[in-house]
Amino acid sequence: MNLINFKSLGDARGELVALEGHRNVPFDIKRVYYISGTESGVSRGFHAHKNLQQVAICISGSCRMVIDDGNNKESVLLNSPFKGVLISSMLWREMHEFTSDCILLVLASDYYDESDYIRDYGEFLEIVNG
Ligand code: TYD
Image (tube, rainbow, N blue to C red; front, side, top):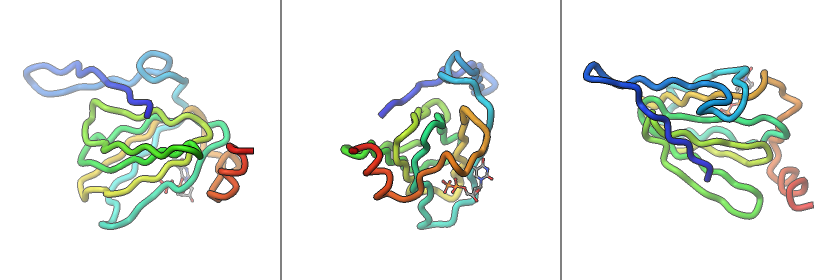
């Protein structure tokens, strides 16, 4: 699992985290989106990307991120605005166990492009394992 620790620039007033492309985020940030209000028991993701790189940070609440490279599955509880997971291309991701206050912020290296998605797990395994 490729975790990134983000330093807080906070002070006595509270926390502050800055995210900068090619500095603490290892790509140009072309798109930002966030997932919130996820209903209890709902899981999301279930896809890989051919080229896209993303960093996901739970800036409120928590969720469990499962990353699968086709051979190994790793899981991390994202429960801190100071911890992100770098999701490189060709990794199957699933998000589970969203708390009702979870806001999952995602930084992406490119614009939304449905043709970059692999949404079929069998197809994903075929591509990564040949
Ligand atoms: P999807 O990537 O399937 O969500 P998740 O992986 O979190 O379960 O996206 C859900 C829908 O939103 C799908 O119809 C595509 C659309 N979408 C955009 O239009 N732009 C975006 O940047 C994203 C992430 C999704």
